[in-house]
Length: 301
Image (cartoon, rainbow, N blue to C red; front, side, top):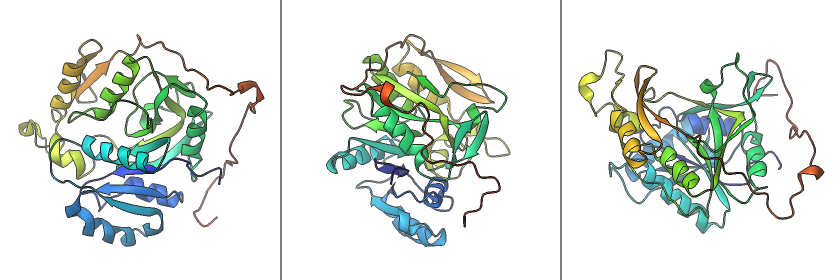
């Protein structure tokens, strides 16, 4: 089916069997996907598949390690190798706190109910030789009163990434692994691309129980946790590690009530290289992949 993703979709998850936002969204869209979990979480996640009625669309992958304390990168690398072992050209890797996916159309952020949100970016990326990482922009980064281009070249991609399996780099570090991975790719002269045309409804950092929120952000600088159990300095170490890794382009900043990092991507001006045999002039000017705008949509339709 042309609306289904052609590359495997992985979710990295830990102790979030009570929410499972990303998996529930994908299941509603009838997208088959993997959830990579640690051994001690298996029973809880297996039970949750029935509680949320998503079992037909989910394959649980039990990781061969647990509670290592060095972040989700190890699990992401394991999924990368799993995808390679299946002969895939690329793979998607998603955070577990994404609530719905959207198409940006005339500044309206419209929820998408099919795999087109993945398939269209896949087809676009596959026209080029040097796009190593692609992904979807956060929904909250595109307010409806601002105009944005459908794509942005050579920047970072967070939380929902389409990765070329031949990329020579791998996930590393305890925090900000996605920004670090994108920067290493860009410093090689290869391209990244983030889609504004399709969006992810990502929950803000530290707002969903479990995962890195419990394991890192609340524990570190924990004396600063406020009455809402939100730690404005919980991401201090996260941002500082990135600055230490990439001092030429990264610096600390204070935004949205907590410590962030700021990265200058203006020096990455490389251009995408079309694959041999690809002729853009022969492609339709507009291809909506059969998507239709439906008001008052109900799942039974």
